Image (cartoon, rainbow, N blue to C red):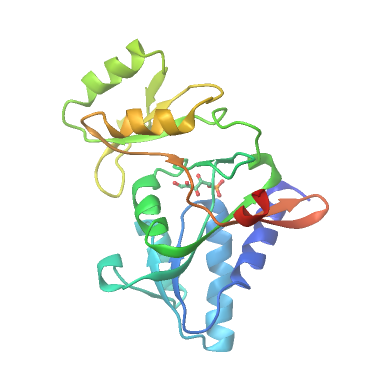
Length: 229
Ligand SMILES: O=C(CO)[C@H](O)[C@H](O)COP(=O)(O)O
């Protein structure tokens, strides 16, 4: 199976976790896109009564085009289950997200959910986080100074681009990607980044996900945080 087939596999599997009447958080990215297609079919065929909150304008549009009800997060009490992708997941269930520049809304939706389920192909499972660049969402005002601070800290920053222009997130911010290599102390790093003025959010998702569905060449593996012991 190629990577796309694995993404389809986990997307289809994740949709089985959605029950009629649920409030569902929809993530962002190519794996989630396949999951939302699959959910659209279920909603139509089974006339499911679900309400969704989205982590990006793009996913919201896709879902609405498929006839799925999407409401603003502020009109929703609490999300039952959020299904999202990830860029990397370590053995202790820490993750990096934001490859699709949606990390801010993704973290807000995830932390307002009773359960968070991530769907990934096996290439995303790593021993230690950090091979994937760590996205940091920053306020555009004065961001070049933050960029210089990151350079001095040895974090090898690059601005995320959209063609010739700086990429703008759904909240109109910039993304600076940090090329860190293996991250030994994710909690310390997360605190450090959160304390920097101008940083809106970072892509370290620590202690957030409950369940991970991994697509492998031997089929699906479902891992739970509870199994970590
Ligand atoms: O965090 C994300 C978007 O901000 C995505 O979930 C992450 O980048 C994984 O995307 P894909 O399924 O395309 O590999």
